[in-house]
Length: 559
Image 1 (cartoon, rainbow, N blue to C red):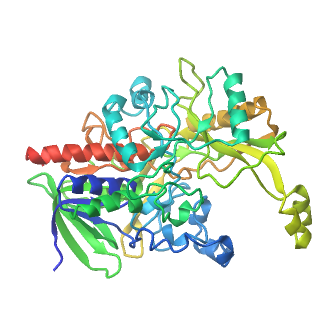
Image 2 (image 1 turned 180 degrees about the vertical axis):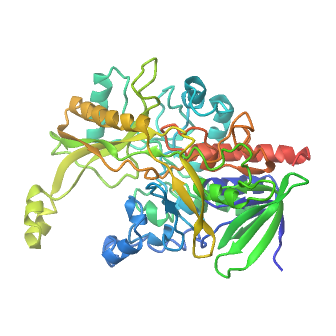
């Protein structure tokens, strides 16, 4: 009979869940790691990682039938013919869009750590202090100095390549050598720096790709096939990094196909006692018990677990006493920016690939400047030249086309903004009482939108982008603005924010649920504001810190 009692249970095996499992196991706890989807084993299950585009039936493109069957998944830039089964099936796991929300989910061991963009940035005190200074939402109970050592801890383990810039809005970290910008990016960066007196800077992206080998992992091979899994461990994922570390301790039990339907709660002890699990393959229900529970199902699914854990004590869900559970949903809005054509580098070529781009750190609403919106944005993008001439575009078919495609195309550059979304109370998720998934479970209803502050910011993302490229000498500069829909940034945050006061927050400063302190929520749910930089590094740092605190509390017998 399978073991049902553990020291700790971790719900979800993605970026933060993998970290929770690693840290708990390495501190000596017997850990059960639950994942609602299938197992994906490092290297052996990356079945498409060695294939070329010609080996796929449609060269990686989705067919009309696949698009029709996956209407939500095709809204983004991730899913394709080559990795469709690593993105959640919309028909099996639907959700209700009160307003359009593009929800991209990865239901397998490793979750979206196999699919993420790997851009890796620290938050600064400017981010942690913004809510308090501007009277938005509630104050973060943590400042940069407290979390900085945990950023160090995570960066040293996962491997982050990047350059030292000494920018107050974008703290430096424990970096591996940076990747190199190409000749056009270097020249544009120099012109932007000069045009704006170094108040705006284009740098190489900071990314969780190894530029030097780490134990058990080989440095990045620049294949740009990260979305198929990396046999070299060249980028950070649960499979390449945290799961092997946890397994090495002998303390980990991994159980795929395990949908956690609720967290079990003892009203007398005011503590969680474990979890209820629905086996996704057999439809049988199990209960597992533990001293502590780490909830890392990803922001929206963690909200679902808590809402679905309602009891007579907490009819609004576990952690609902403040009335904030499910509220303050955030994302980064993107899809707006600028691009253009670059002349004068026709004799310059790029060699190989690079799984990274350039980054322009936030510069708005800093140093006393005030716009007609608050907070800021950064840009991600890059320059390159493709294959094919204008003649190839006109020829379209045949041997002449093939010959034309042997020529290098023109140089182009683009930059797209990642903008901060504020924590609005009425951007909320609830349980849809009328709609169920494949397993008969009520699905999540998402009701959120970008508001006036974000819309004003988008306008400036476009105008600033065009201006910078024009000052850098780029030709035929254009702006672009796509949907502006929540979810498109794939950076869901909020719904169980942390704070100083149990009357206004779901979690305390250590990621513990005020109403059940032996339950820790350390995925994007805990975020009190969104910042404008990619958040995964912050999830990992807070997870490691929360585990350290949990161990201390266990030793004191407080949990």
